[in-house]
Length: 131
Image (cartoon, rainbow, N blue to C red):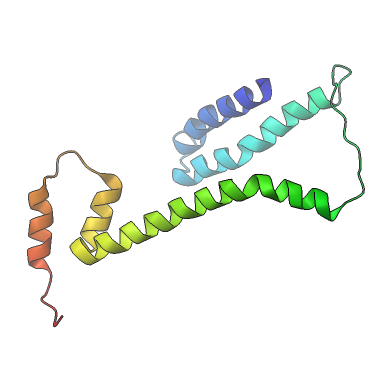
């Protein structure tokens, strides 16, 4: 828990430091986010190597039945993630067909100041097709 909190705090602080004082912008934020798991692992490793640790790891002989039982746990999560991704892609293609690029960008950002009349204007600007 402490390792996760320290890693998150590192990310928050170094996002600011890398983005503004260092002038790296979004690249600095990406760098801070990439280094954050390293900080978390370093803190957790100090606990793992201490005398307070009660967790141990043992090597086991691999078995096919154990592999199948582990995979059964992850199949439902995999299907859920895949279905949400497919749904997002299908909706993006539908919006792309109806409102064009402006509609896809508008549906992702969902600005509060634009009304439906903005979509009507973007439809009227599209060239007519022979469909």
